Length: 210
Image (cartoon, rainbow, N blue to C red; front, side, top):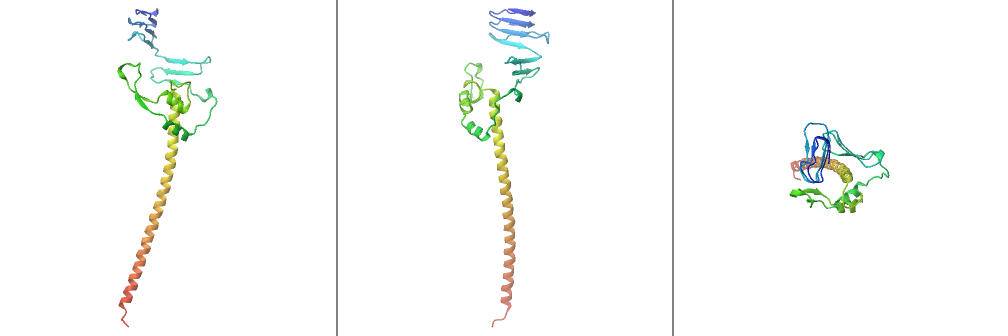
């Protein structure tokens, strides 16, 4: 199926839509091209879904179009709905508890069994993450906002502990300096006492024997 201007769908079960879009002979490919350039967008693999949308992408998952993700024009980063106005059931987080749960979640490097080329990744498994935090819809996936929230809470807890340790170290440093000052004072007092004893001994030694 080819719809639009200079579109071509020449692979079996393929589709091309929009402006200068071509499946390039690939089977099962779906290609959409916008009108931002006179260059064509071509499929590069069978069963690929390729889209050129230079104005960006908007994905919405509710009827009022308030929840979803955007991929802004020219960007490589998804921005997803996270306003407090869209949330309910808000509860505070115990950072210390989050750290304790993080310790129970193993982190490994791995490859997706269906990904070509042996590409390596690093991260927790969804089963372990869900068992530790109970976040998300199931134990087969991890929401990027969930793992970011866990990381953020853990960092805040570590920062709080660091500040506490800094305060303790500063207090201990002040105590050490006070002890050093007292030690210097004791040494000065001892030196003065030794000098007095030496003078007394000298006076006693200078007196004639009875």
